[in-house]
Image 1 (tube, rainbow, N blue to C red):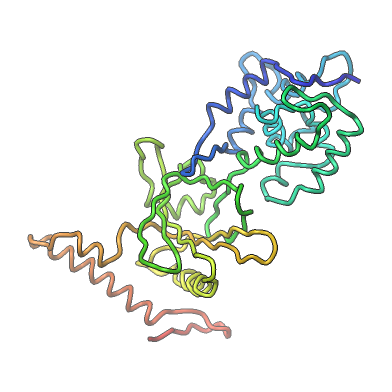
Image 2: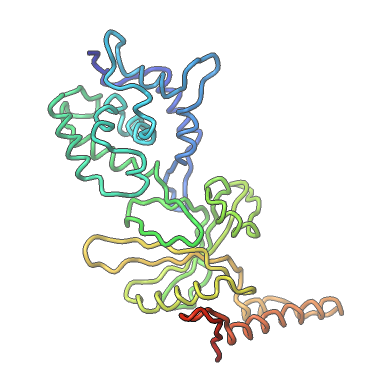
Length: 338
């Protein structure tokens, strides 16, 4: 059986690393991340003049060719992101992919943010038995160091994915939100803060969320086509306020004229620590009082008419909320009044 090289420097590995550099992105916190779709597209692509895909050539390059490889590319179909993490310069252990596949550490396992501890333990056990060589930078046979490097890098390949009306828990700390331009909108509230975010159009994969954000799409001079939205984050100790406002936003999300509720996510620590809650909302540049303070009074007839038409829309929305229509437990239409 052929033995994998400790630090494969094939042209295919170098081509992949160049691809990583080209596809590297940074969020508003300057954290590096990659889109899983960009990684898989390269893996499954055929280079000019090649009869097989890049991932086939890549996996074949891990072995000397004087025997049967420990793994073939078709076994890596569900492990392409795992392979990408192993190939990253900070890990540099692509030749260990067969062990990671054997221990069933798949892409979905990473993307679902499942706890990989048991998988990691199995990988270290198998590596300790087989004792493959490690590249420079590692103490030989220190497979725990490989796992530590892998665990640190993997987050860049699994940025948080957004869906319309999501209600998702993310692990606190290393999870990367693929947002750009995070700016505080106002600091009026004492229970929460509101930030304005942008996200590049191709980062949003959900068709439903794209449709909901369509009106906010614009061309940013630096990042190209982007959507924008607001996130209301609740400080620790205000769980009751969060629950009340979350239910309120959900309840009026189909109401015309009201800021749209797009979903929410939570960062959870271990143990009984209260999670950090974040509600995703349609972006509005100003409150009504801020708009009136910053806007000159209308002068021309057309301006006056337009102003009052817009103001009447606000009044109509408030009226509809005070007589809000909902379906009761018996299935009949009822109304909140107040």
